[in-house]
Image (cartoon, rainbow, N blue to C red; front, side):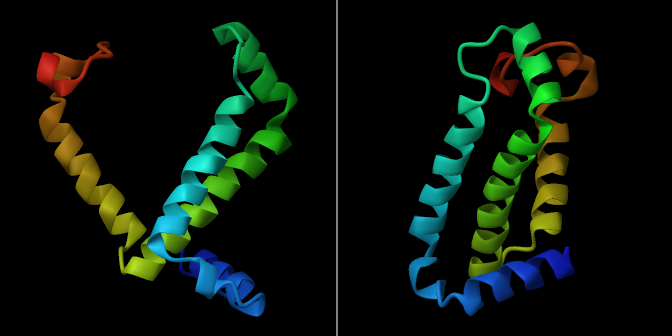
Length: 112
């Protein structure tokens, strides 16, 4: 992950874009790129979406990368260790969604 963060910083800094990459603008960019990822699957049935993903893997990978790049940069800029944040959140989610209550159920923890 350190190498990825370094490359994102270098790419940004070579273009003098830090001036535009404040938390608000990065959060907006994450949402925009996530919407572009959603657009790949819009109006498709489950089966069509699965086939579309197989047939358009590079385009979908590009959209996922766009989301990830902005997300990693936002975390880096505000001092959040992404790996640690994920570990912490998984721990919280495990408490909210105990296996014996959540297994096979797609409901919010408040409904368990």
